[in-house]
Amino acid sequence: MIPSVVAAAAGNEFEQQPLPYAYNALEPYIDAMTMEIHYSKHAAAYAKNLADACVAEKVNPQTTSLETLMKNISKYSAKMRNNGGGHFNHEFFWKCMKPGTSTQPSGKLAAAINQSFGSFEAFKTAFADAGKNRFGSGWAWLVQTADGNLKIGSTPNQDNPLMDISDLKGTPLLGLDVWEHAYYLKYQNKRPDYINNWFNIVNWDFVGSQLK
Image (cartoon, rainbow, N blue to C red; front, side):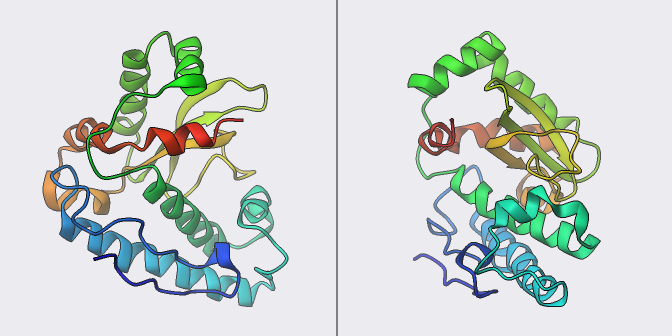
């Protein structure tokens, strides 16, 4: 059963969307309890707090896109940065995964990965390292830069590559949550195991659809 949505703000992008699969759909790689807590507690809180920040800082979700907000985040408060980033990142993260056994990228995405990293295996190693080596909490990303090339990197906390304050800049293609709440119930301190298993549920169709 798909969990119910927790609406947070008037603009569609600014609301928490329904999870596109059941809490247990990504097992055994991500357990149902982790997914339920992650979606219904952590992600829901980011959406609610973003709505509060929008009211306080006079951001109208009907006339401002979430992407535009991210690209101008330096103009806003830490609350807006943390919760706007947290909301965007989680909504993106859910789409990066799908039930079943993941296949490898194909078509233009596969070609772009091979061109940028040499091979799919080399890409996986570099992406996993970005997640493993992120000190504390944060995200690992595959992005397409302004010149059309692909790049791997990570961001701290709830920052993302769309933000004007981010050292890593580009269009997100794939994002991985490496906050402990994303994996600790199942993997405890073994973040590398979580990352390696996560590749089994990557939605490469979605990733490819983000490629420009």
